[in-house]
Length: 379
Image 1 (cartoon, rainbow, N blue to C red):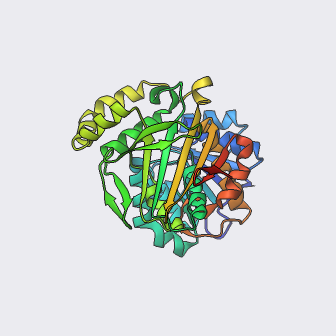
Image 2 (tube, helix red, strand yellow; image 1 turned 90 degrees about the vertical axis):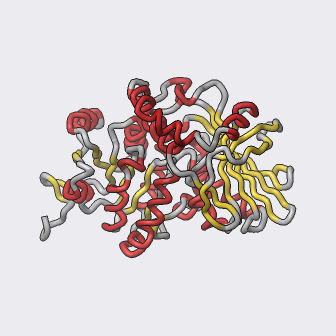
């Protein structure tokens, strides 16, 4: 369609925004968040009938069927879009073609991945490409990683920058299990995370380190002391660059007994997950598509704790409805991209795409709350 604007389709301009993976649980929430902001968008995915049904439900929005093995369908779907929201996972299996195309075509991009290996791949393969094309590629613009990245940036600032150690701790809310409160896509991603290679940023370098290698205790916002074990997460890839931290580790709270057991079995746990993967995948396929009601509204808490020269800063982030928050984060990114407010290019961290305090303030109506402590005292 050279010679005329590629964005013209059946007599009308194509939408500047494309939501890929729109028929999934998170993708539909992103569509709802965009529509609530009055942002026009198109929906894309691999299943024509599901896309048509979603289009009708959304009042007849534009659709695009994409075969990830056919580069022509990807280029045709992306066309001259300005922004792509990628919501289909596991990203290590299906995410690269869309991210790569956006990096090459100069299209701003944000995704909902929590997969460390995918973010590492993006940085390794596409940073220079995105910088050259002028694309802002922001993986992990979603709960949990984006709020954790913003909190880490604030914590690093509070200790004067370049922390000696920066720990990020996920503290799941009570009253729900991983089975009840996550989507099928999240479950599949978690399986991929623990079956794959795990990294932590230690002493200035990204190093292989099995999950549960480190078990530590941390203070909660209400003053309790909890046990947490190290897990792989994208923050170890993206946080060091904008904080200058010497060591960045990511943790998840767990009972002391289970944490110590996982630490003892860490050497063969990934192989066990890979062996059980077919059975786990079938079980996940039979689970509900995503959480509803109280399960979806589950509260969450996370902590970014920075240490430097005897000084400690703790930044707590709290909220509810992680998937709803993810949709609002995506919509915020899109709104800023359309307004020309994205000033960085390449593969970037959430804190580089949107300044932490701006993001936190914009998301306050979505229930996101921030609490900062310097050397144990609230500020």
